[in-house]
Image (cartoon, rainbow over all chains, first blue to last red; front, top):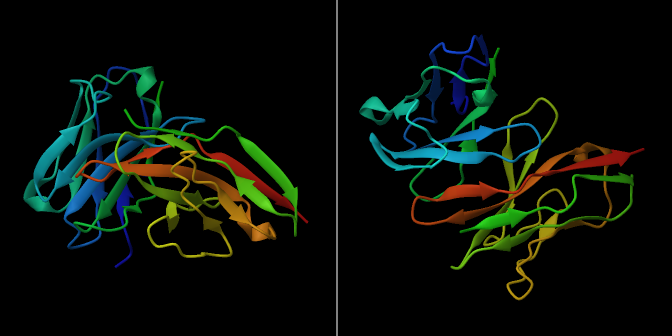
Length: 112
Length: 109
C-alpha cells in the first residue's frame, strides 16, 4: 500500500471552467476527508465520508462544490465555474473508523 | 466553535537549542489534540497525539486544560527538525480536524 494518492498533483484552469480531483484512500479505510489549504493557513475541513455516505459538509463548501465517493472507495471533488478564490491546495485524508488520518500529497489548483 | 491558535509564524534556533512551539485551543468539549508535521516536499504526517503521551523524535507535548494549551517541546533541536508544524484538534464524532495556521521551525547548524 503506497498510502493516499491524489490526481492530478497540479491543475491550472481558467476562471469559469470546471475541474475534478480524485483521491484514492488507503484500502479498507472507512473514512475519507477533504480539506483545503490556502497560503499561510492550516488545512480547513471541507467534507467527510464514511464509506459511501457523505456525512458532513462545511459551510466553506459552496453550491459550486460537490464530492462523491461511489462504492466507498475513491472519491472525487468537483468545482464548477471556478473562481480565483478557489486557488488552493486540496488535501485528501483517510482513516479507519477510529484512528490516525493519513494525508495525500494534495492537488494544487491555480485559477487564472 | 473550536479554534486552534499558533501565535508565531516562524521560530529560528541553532542546533542543540531547546524548542517550544506554542499552541492554544478553544473547545467546549473534551478535546483530542495533535501535532502534525510537514517536511519539505513531503506530505502532512502525524507527529504525536496527546492521548498516547509518547515522545516522538524527541518531541513531547502536554495537554494543559487549565491554560487550554498543547505546546510542543524538544530539549535539543536537530537540523532535520526543520519543517512546518501544525497543531490540530478533533471535534465531534466525525473526527474532523481543526488546524492552526502552522509555524515554520528552522534549525540552523
